[in-house]
Image 1 (cartoon, rainbow, N blue to C red):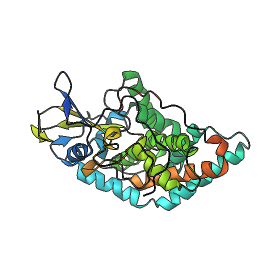
Image 2 (image 1 turned 180 degrees about the horizontal axis):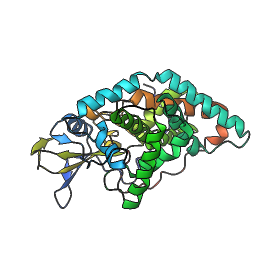
Image 3 (image 1 turned 90 degrees about the vertical axis):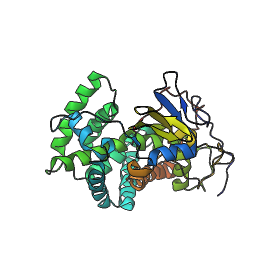
Amino acid sequence: MTAFPLRIAAAPDTPPCAPPTPDRTGVTWTVTRHADVRAALVDPAFAVPRVAPGPPGTFAWLRASVARFSGPGRHPSRRAATRTLLTGLDPDLLAREAARLTAAALDRRAGSPDPPARLARDVPLRVLAARLGLADPAAAVPAVAVVAAAYQPGADPAAVRRADDAVADLVANCPTGPDESTAHRIGLLVQACDATAGLIDAAIRRARSLPATVSTPDLLGEVLRLDPPVRATRRIATVAAVLAGRPIPAGAVLLLRFDAANRDPAVFPDPDRFTPGRPALTFGAGAHGCPGDRHALALAAGVVGVLRDRSPHAVAPPPPEPTRPTDPTGARR
């Protein structure tokens, strides 16, 4: 592993690594150490949050049908179905198509390309939607963004209503097939939306401070650790359990902080230094670990590689570390 002079400080609200700690109510526990986060991810006593079902073709139906929110009874078959869809998607082909669309966007706007943030969202979704068989990949992009904005439990009612309409549009855009197959297609697009765009955006912001000899895969891998697009995920204790020697009561909510665990000095010496080759926990682990990690990285590499090669002016110097929201959870697995 080669260390570079670049150091990426943690976001201001990233907690230090410490034993699992409850909040004042004792209901929510923050988990920050690498070993503890990984242990919680693989322990069946800690489950993903449940969601309410709904009529076919609705937003509630979508969430209740995908592996992301499925309990142990339904999760294995739904995850297997999702993996079957992914098996038909060659990561190398995804990267090449993402690179082609990115280059085409730059060519169309010669001298004034689409903002990197727009490319970061639109290109991966268009490529993935096309490969998943949607009739109109371009139309899928805004609909997926609307669903992603409401995907996590606790979204406001107005966002959920918008998501209902967007899910109906996406169902009509998908190839004809069983309801769950349609849900898995849409679920893959939603999971890819904010997380892949966030990874691309962060990589673009960091690239200017690194030599061109740093490969795009190395750039993405280390940005995934130091500036993760998904900073945390939640689990619910289904029974009384023990984590790192701490008794966790049934019903407790665990906030698993990837951003802290990825900088655990017990695992990563000099954790803020940009050193490619150090694996991140950002894609999760255990039964709910991201099944599409290679595909997400391929899509990101296709966009970032072209931006680095062809439009260095679009890769702005990294700004000061932003102040991020107190609730770090985004597209959680």
